[in-house]
Length: 340
Image (cartoon, rainbow, N blue to C red; front, side, top):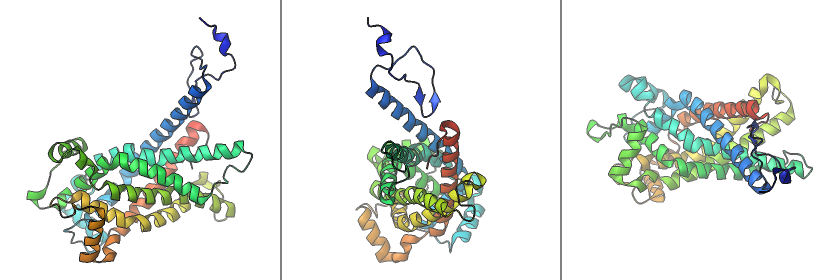
């Protein structure tokens, strides 16, 4: 047996996202394996942080998601955001009304949110490290590159998380349906299980093209523009936006407001199409995303594609602020580095 001294000089497999795991008796003689293991550990840590951060944000923002979904689906008679909020509360209360489907929202953070924010943070840090090694400014990353990172992470997360997105739409909108059409799901596990049993496993990805396209566009704007706006606003150094005042909260708040507005304008039409297809119980939109789009525009007008824009923005902005702020601060505590 070869002596362990033959591996002196090889780095020990102890670092995972800045957290040291003491295992001096387990050297890593293969530097490639060490690099891959370390990278996987860093990515996993970022995804877990993103999931918990997303759950925290979803706890506060879920009612806005319910209001948005009920305004976007057919049969909605609400005149606006306030009317919808009051109507849902008066009819079903907080637990069964404004917080209907919250368990699906939490699952969504572990499937979609963890990938969207976690993978983006990992790709951004990798690009920054590459710049440092090349001897250039670590933030010398183009907006298009950042948006491509966001598009990639959003697309992956959305495809993985489509079943939870479907459950969220179904559960959020169920109370709006007539009694005979309600599905009366008891929770996200039962919802997903029943869809798989009653409609087939592929049905869990109903509306996936619209969901993935929406997520790609939304994530490209929300993540890429946030990073870019944060850097540019910090460079201006005005109105507490230098990145240092109050722990960087004003800077991140301003950056995410800008990115959230851009993301919502671009992604809202796909959100409407997605909600219609995922809630469809009659097969009206069974011919696909493009047919659904044409039916909405032809029957209800092009502005219908931006229905629910106010609650969507009111949800997206604070959700993005809270989730990214929590991700950034938790990452800073655990690794000593910023996430965005």
